[in-house]
Image 1 (spheres, rainbow, N blue to C red):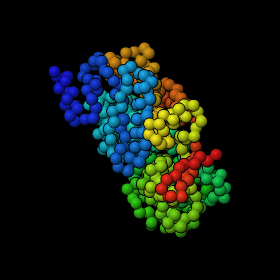
Image 2: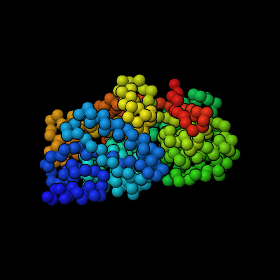
Image 3: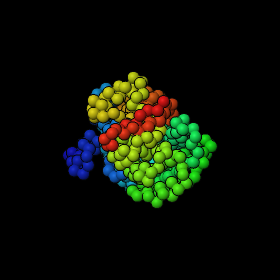
Image 4: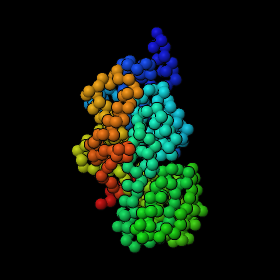
Length: 394
Ligand code: PYR
């Protein structure tokens, strides 16, 4: 039959099965699964975050389907965006036009979101960003929301923590990656906060996320005797910069932004990662029953402690699944036309309050997350110089 053939064609070129291909046909056909798109950087430099996010998605799919929260069950349709804009745009197009997803979790970087999100907005497909923290993401459109608290809310906490550790701080060297939207947004917030706290910015040094050699920027900055260094970049460039600061004998405090908020940083700066301060929107130590249950499920499935990126991706899935559950109480999700379901899903998710591993969250009318609890972690490397952890500062 035609249906069967189209199913084979889809299987020949993609990862997902026949149940999704039925959804691409005319409205009203019943679906045996509810496809949720996941567009993450699973390769390239941003895969240091994307792989952590994917872990959160895996645990969400297992748990929510075991709990039978939706009828029919959800199915995560995963696309690798790579780490650039073109890859994110392709992934969004495939998820929307071929997999016919109800909503999308992704992309990994703000830099990718500014290119890919407008595609979902035009198609009327809700996007829940798990890790986009630049200012301006929810403002991309009515269908764009995020569970990742923005740099404007998170970043200042690190500077306040540094001043608490050393009230004598005065001279600050700021570094940022100028080819990345998140890094530009975060450095703006860092610089505003530093000035508001009465600190002097003695230099602003620029690099690229693809750079590995920061010797000249570090030398320029150290000549000015900073006692605090504040870095906004991604994990690979940020880690190399941290290592070279220590190699060139910088002894003072270092603050890293959300780009270095991953244990995948540790193999890059190794022992030199020790002591770096990072503000965080999640702590595995949060004692709430919701978080501890999540943490146990995560550790049982993946044999590791959940990170912020994992917890945020899980939370994005939770928001979509709980919203589908609420809609399913008065609607037949299997037969509702896809366009109508996407629209209703977006309205529903913006209205809800969610008890998540990040704490209780809800959304502003334009889709920015409202979250109460934030943390500052300080990296503690083990004597082997390879492994370590983010120790919670009180
Ligand atoms: C962003 O791209 O928004 C991150 O926070 C990494």
